[in-house]
Length: 192
Image (cartoon, rainbow, N blue to C red; front, top):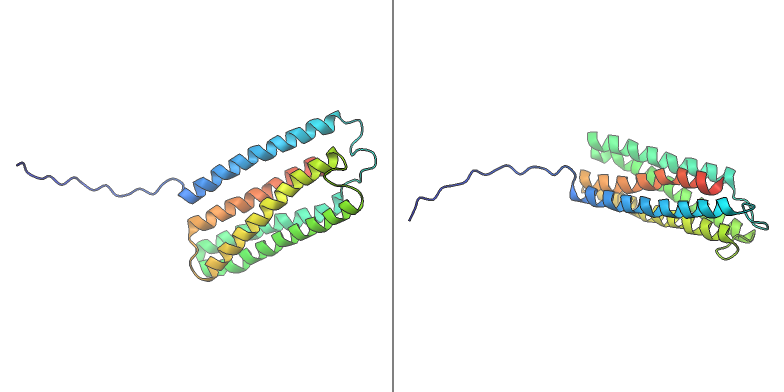
């Protein structure tokens, strides 16, 4: 028998992106493609229309939604503030995370109020292509917003327990920044 030779142990290198962040990045890229397709279809239909919105359909509440957009953008800023605090002292990041959750919740609630008003004015999924596209695109964004708010709430609970890891927080942030960053594009394309 020959002599046993020990091979040198290489130190384990950290991946360029943690698995959770990479997974969320791939998910966000897929969702960007989904929304790009929806917006493209909407713009084609709108461009071919003689009049937009169609006759008998209400105009969308641009001013009220501008306020709502501001709340959502502020929630993104609050989360960036939370990240800066998390790096220095994780326990100090809880309040800005909760502020981001509250502002996101405000956004979703006001969107719901807006929808109720639009339904009362006759804009429904079946009233026109305008209504169909509006509720499909904005509703899908609202679904993403609710999921991201739940993820932020979960992250806040883990943070309060002292068990939130940086890579986990980064994954949740990436999802929320997608929701926040997508909205101004949807607002500009759908509401104007």
